[in-house]
Length: 158
Image (cartoon, rainbow, N blue to C red; front, side, top):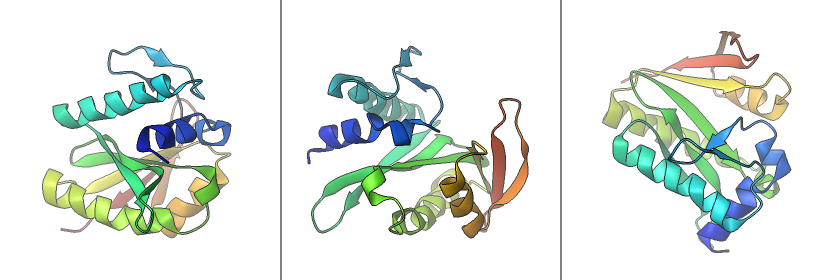
């Protein structure tokens, strides 16, 4: 599957978009979610490429090593001393251990390249898969936000 088609497979999935929150393009315009076309998912790619260039956020593509198949993304909605972690997987790959494998190198990068000392992540209370994952990753529940999401944090070591 070409990576553009892979991004479409990811962002056209109602299961993925259910807890993703609002999605915007690089001009601040809302992107329909789930996306109806490849060109709409390409707007999400452009958004994250621009964020990386500007240095405030980033995403990496997750690929299966053996086949170079796109299966999701992992990265940061914000970068700093406290960075906001986010990830999305195509549902066919849920529960196969890919996120734990991707998480440590991404956090190591944040420490080495961005002097990050704390990671935060926000989840809908109904998103049991993600809540279980962050608890297994030793995140600590640290409150509920104004929009009702649960904030988790994790302190990183140098």
